[in-house]
Image 1: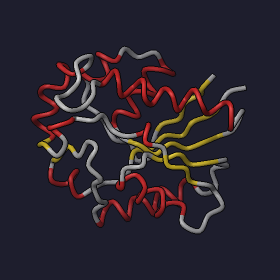
Image 2: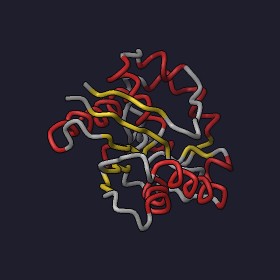
Image 3: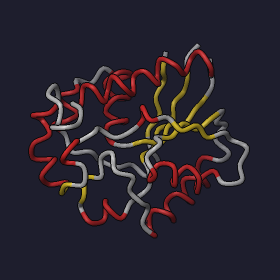
Length: 179
C-alpha cells in the first residue's frame, strides 16, 4: 500500500529575503511568509491529510502552526526533515553556498554534514511512514534538502543532478507516491 506525500517547503523567511542560507539555524518567517503560510493552510486543510510532518526548525514549525491552526490534522515535528547542516556555514550568504555546494555532495561541510547524509536522514522518515500511516496521504514541511531527498529516493534523480540545479520553490508544492 503506497503513501501519497504532499511536500511543501517552509514559507518565506527573513533570511530568504536577505539572501542568507539559514541551514540548521531556526530562522523566522517574514510578514510575506506568514501570509504564504495562511494560503498553504487554505490550500491544504481540505486535502484529506492524515497527518503533517514538519522539520523541527522554527521556520518550518511556524509554517505548520499557521497553516493548520485550529484544524484536526495532527502535526508531528521530526528533526530528520531539517535542511542540510552547513556547519560553520549556517547563516552564510546563499550565493557563497550555491557556488560551492557540489563539493559537499559526499564530503561534509566543516562542522556539518554532506548532502548525501542529509538525504539518508530524510530517507529514514520515508521508511517510517508506511508502518504508522499505511495508504494514507500525508504532508511534509521541510527545506530544499528535504525535496532533494524526495526526488532522489522516490523519483531516482541522481543527487549530483539535484545539487547542481538551482532549487525552484513551488507555491503549490510537490506530490510523490511512496511505494
